[in-house]
Length: 368
Image 1 (cartoon, helix red, strand yellow):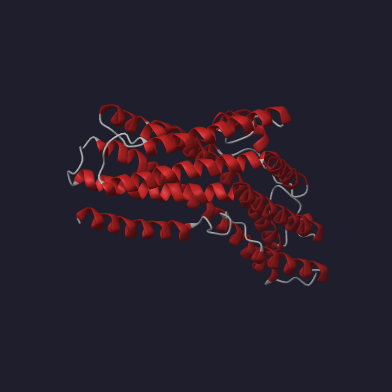
Image 2 (cartoon, helix red, strand yellow):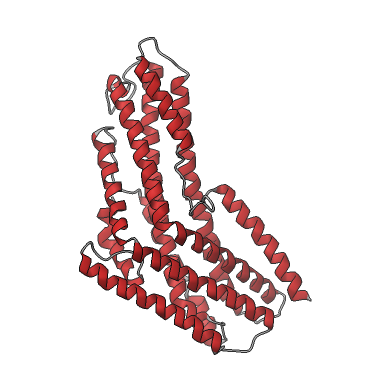
């Protein structure tokens, strides 16, 4: 499925986020281009720090430098991780394709394409992230935004990288959901003891071979999640750091504008930063939570299956079922950022709680 989207996704190579093609020549050129983007963003940071655009209060200057530096570091991590993993990216695409063929061939699941809701969500977020760059550009032209022009390319790269990550996670979640739905069909057949579904033979669904195929498909999914985490773990971690700091700081600037410390036109810029950042955090955590819940559903289906033994069930089937349950419990299908965190609802609540804490600290400093 990812291969079918590659003719469209390859244009993200203009930002260094995906390989343009599988040929070694184009990958070499793209590595040079990505290296140029890294050098350009790093040079913009250094020049802007040594030659500040305006004179700002010390606290404001320090906060802006921290946020600006976090964006540049995030872009460097994203581009470097992509440069190193060009070949692995296509291995990841091939693994998704092979898993889809297994689901269609052995489990008789119609994989199809992504739903229109997914396309609408990804396209809507992508367009929204681009449109929300207009207000800060307007404010920067009319007033002044410290380090905005120097960080514009990094903002664009980070936001488009988030759109790609959401697409990948939705794709993984769809495969987990399909596997869970098929396992639910198996459970229904065992409980009802008849041809209870329209798209398959109940005897085939209750067979040892079919359960083995389900178990292998789950293991393939686990390897796919692990590969995804290895490919994008550091970039996901650095992106979360930038989204957290950027949204927190711009919420603080919004409070300062409402307190009439700055001109009201700055509200256009602050809203156009913290709203997209909070949206990305919320949507990404919800997608990660969906994957975890689907994995929990798979485990619940298997436990229900084991708690309803049948006299006609083979001992080998029971043993394989117990192994499958242990596999699901030990091999969680979750989006993990290099072991630092898992993207789920608990991460969302932790970030919101930390955001409130840092906002209180910033307000206390500003009142001194």
